[in-house]
Amino acid sequence: MYGSVADSKMVKELSDILRLQDSNGWANLSAFIRQHLNENDLSDLIDYPSLDIVEPPVKSALVWIYSLTAALSVAGNVTVIAVLSFGKR
Image 1 (tube, rainbow, N blue to C red):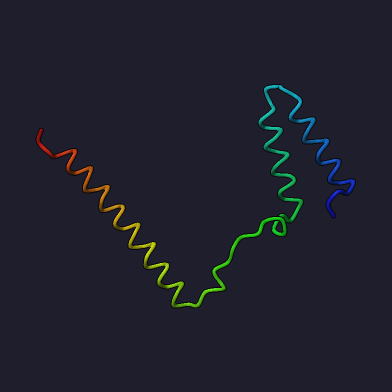
Image 2: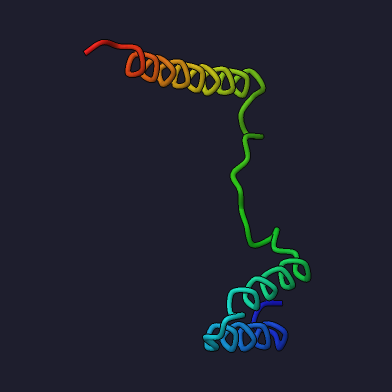
């Protein structure tokens, strides 16, 4: 599938858009990206790691750890804001 005539046409079209420096350049590039993302299934190009290799208790532990970290971070930031706002010099 890669290296086909359609791919070379897409590359030529993209290079033409990038070469043109007119006021509609960003709109043209945006339309090009939207068109080709809608036309092509890119899911086989992107390999996201999966947590399916770990057991459910480990997943739960990771969720709790990340949640605790986020909660402590928010609490710390709120504390700093309160101290800086209400603290006396």
